[in-house]
Length: 267
Image (cartoon, rainbow, N blue to C red; front, side, top):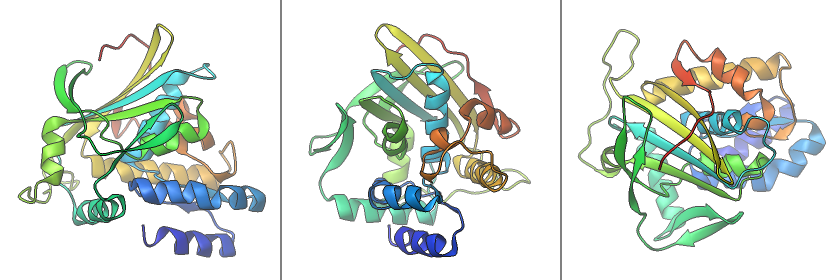
């Protein structure tokens, strides 16, 4: 929230690409709102939220869309076995809460709504082996900012497994610790992206270990593609707009397990 603007300004002056891993809704909304026209006019590349939250969900929704030009709804559900936040996660959450006050944000009917009611407690049926789990609905993450920027979907919603949602807000949750030689924690995840058009639903999923460890290959792959010219557009662009989403996701398969075959979903 405090560094995005100055670093983007520096990147524009230096005529170099800018990619970040920010998950804060406000920082990402500001990036699209303040820099989209200017970056397009300058022929610059600015890719916000190129991380687990934002980039991965956006790529999965884009892949699930396939040849559709529009859809009625997009849902991105996160099943995290736990969520031991880093210091950075706690700080960014505090900044967002300070800016947002008592409100929460959701995206409905093609516009942002500020809500004061509690986010709904629901259940989501994830692909096996996770299965049906309690989730917090309208647990709005960076994907809800990025997806409508380039896909004609008026309703975009993210969901978080209830136990992980409790972990990340509890002051008693310990910081993550390495569980193997690579430095990854033992946290596991499954991201389930579902898009609906009429009575037809399409799904794309990704699973793996340690949400923080997956951010590094995401942003590194993105940077390599920007520097080698494997991009589809210029300006302030989400992951699914600037990259070939299925090809990008398959390049991450050493780090995640994918299922990109459209199928029915039950929420």
